[in-house]
Length: 228
Image (cartoon, rainbow, N blue to C red):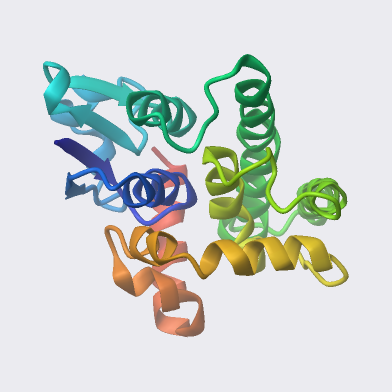
C-alpha cells in the first residue's frame, strides 16, 4: 500500500496518474498548500524540502520518496511498468523525463509566477518564460511527428510531460500549430487512468480554469506560497 501526500498540481498529477496506470493501491493525504501544510513538521520529516508530492511505501518499511521524477522512477522499478528494463529503452525514458524535470517544469513554473501570480507585471520576464516554454513544446511536437509517444511505448516520461503541458493556458502559452503535440495530449487525456489521476486529490481542479472565482482563489493560494 502506498500513502500519497499530494495537491492538485502538475507534479502531484504525475504521481496519481502513474499510480492509477500501475493499478497500485494507495491512500490519498491531501496537503493544503495555501495553509502551509507542506511546511508542517510531520510533512518535513517526509520531505525536508517542503514540497509535494511525497509517497510512503508501507510495504517497504514506510520508505518515503520525494521529488516527483524520483517517485515515478521508484514506482516504475517497483512494478516493472511504464519503463523498459533494457538499458537503451530505460535511457530513452529517462532522457524525456529529465527534459520535463529540467525544462518544461521550470520554464512553465516561472511563466506561471510572472504571468499569473507576481503582483507586478514584468513583461520581459513573462515573454522570456512563455517563449521558452513554447520552444520546448515545439521540440516535443517535432519528436512526436514520428513517434506515438516520447520513448517508444507509453511511459512515465509521457505522464510527466503531459501533466505540465496540459496547463499551457494557465501559463499563457499557446499550442496552436502543434498538431502532433495536440494528438499526443488527446490520446493521453482519453486514458481512464489519466482521468482518475487528474481527479486526485481535487476533482474540482479539472474545471477550475472555467470558473473565475476559483481562478482567483488559485492565484491567491499561489501568491501566499511565493511568500514562504
